[in-house]
Length: 302
Length: 99
Image 1 (cartoon, rainbow over the protein chains, first blue to last red):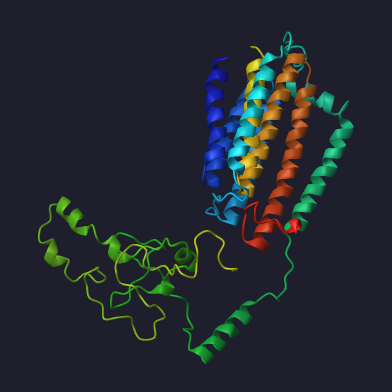
Image 2: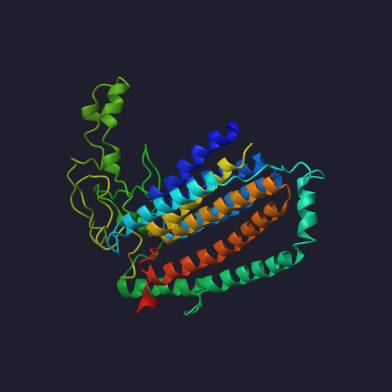
């Protein structure tokens, strides 16, 4: 009983959170809370098999599938707040509240009678009892379920299948294409430059610096640039003075004067022939070409 | 313990799922709200199984879970396909059948 009254508010709050969460990932995690709560409710009500199945199938398989598809589609494909039908959200809320009130009041009025309890039915164990029923009374439904599952598996394969329209590129084709690019456009033949490796930061979101202090645009992934999550090395160096002061080091101003890539180090402009046009105002997200890549995951196919 | 609190909780969760389907625009969130409604009905089924003292309700809940799993697989595949062709997971954008 205590378990129920502890869990029920958490579950209702999490379920309400699904309604108000802006990001789909948050909604999925809140749904996981509700589902695990439901599993415990099943355990409370003498249904240990369903308790296990709820956790394994729902939170384990179905929710992971949701998250998987969410990651494929793009986590930032968030909900639009534009109403296509005027007043639809308000109406839906009002109707939903009325429905919920009716349902809860109606259900609360009903007296379900004396509770028999599952002690007798579970006498030989819950799982054997379920199996007994499943393979006697419900055996036809069970067989139909197998057909349903096969249909669903084939359906998912058919739906997610995509015909290959162009021949698959082999390694030789890629090499030939590179040579052709080099011959025709003078594109660099070798691999792209690696991202920057600095004393305090060496992740892939920091572009490498060219000898003149400007950033090498080709050293960061296009995806990171499109999402606008590129950091700039000069910005990372900003709190060095603060850090050295904390360490009790003096004379930082002089030792810092010739760090390449500082915001105040005057660059000589981009290197000849480099595709990067190297913005230099030192703000953390300057390196991202924002104009041709909107963040909402709808770009690319305008 | 009495069965009414469980049924009321199930009704509340079902209502929240309903409102979610009506208000949310992201197809995946709408789908999650449908799952919430299925789960709420499962809770009612399990509760009634306890009230009546036999396991048929639990069997029904089990079948609901199986069907929900199959439904999620196909539904998410459809959402993926729509996203691939229309670059959007919003239910408002998939309105071509209207015209």
